[in-house]
Image (cartoon, rainbow, N blue to C red):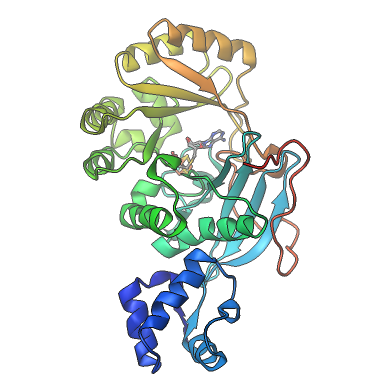
Length: 364
Ligand code: SAH
Ligand code: SF4
């Protein structure tokens, strides 16, 4: 029999479940506290519940459904994990510790991706299915729980793992609410990154959330952007930027544009000027990520000299930019490198987050 995932239940539904088991309704609140206050790993750790209650609960319910299949740790402290979902699908999540104490989880919203961006390993593997909200949430929950055991806190969550969050809009937004309500992560510490689904950007603007928005732009010319990001054939740059302007006007928030800098492809001064003209006057910032290598694409990262000139040209249009430090490259945990082939060493049973290398793991 399939057991119900307790993370999928709201308090009311949990009350119904405990009543069906012949338990008093107040048990539901106790269970919730163990789940999200104490963040216990197992039902058996819910110490103020009678043993018989735990046994009855364990027959019909389980605490989460992600199974850790593999884990790798980068020299820079970045952790990449592969999880097996209940139907056997594999997804990846990444945890990045920063020197200033921030701990950022990068989570997946889909198994694979249907958007087919040519430089992205997830795009190269194709689309398997949408994740449910609980499957998205649980990736962050597991990091948060393990960090808590050593007195640390998951501070930020970015939807920049596998998949296009706005192609799985409802579940992604439901997961955002779970992150806020159950893990206490403030909206301003959550970022959704989209390849540019214009209608969903507008819808997102109307939600009235403080969640940050990042848009993967990568090219300032329609024909060339369509080559790299097929989604551009559906919503071209003009349609995308219209939606972005709507977002800025509606929310008063700044947009981040992501730019995977590829040598000779989108790192020239011409490109920077065209981009500058496009973004001039918009409340935005450009995040430049030197391309990470993937098996199915021959492009190479732009070098720092080109990137500096690119930034200077952007600046002349009043457009600010930052070069993002690449993380987890030695374990293929960087942006766009996630694809689940399970060539990773098998994780040890009960594996937890290892201590970070010196200097990376600073206590908040
Ligand atoms: N689907 C969403 C979020 C996941 S991808 C999106 O595309 O925005 C997260 C970021 O990594 C995106 O900005 C994406 O364009 C970028 N990316 C993909 N492949 C990359 C690569 N090989 N090198 C650097 N960045 C890459
Ligand atoms: Fe999908 Fe984003 Fe990769 Fe494009 S870059 S294929 S949208 S995950």
